[in-house]
Image (cartoon, rainbow, N blue to C red; front, side, top):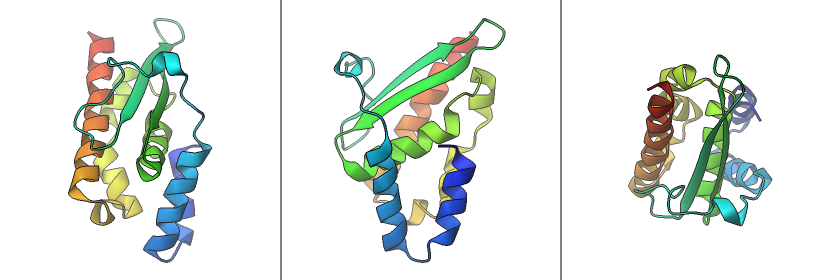
Length: 138
């Protein structure tokens, strides 16, 4: 799912409870992460829940784009992972570095409804993707 679709769906939901349920549904729709990718290397530090992000690049050297996979053991966090994947999936490393993920979350109204721990975990996931994008450009 692309982020613009998620954003449009959020705009149709009037209260936070509906939005919360929608985030959980996004998480449930996320494909299962293969056990082989549930490694320490793919584990995101700084999250209260367990979160794994596998960041691969697909395509030729000129057109390499992110092919991301992720998962969490918490339903709401799994939904946040799905939103992050929608933001970054198919982007080149340079495009990924230009993504304003914090702004996107603020646009959805998630920032004021997440606990500080979840907000920190979200920031850790974004930082992980940004680090991988920077490494790919090096």
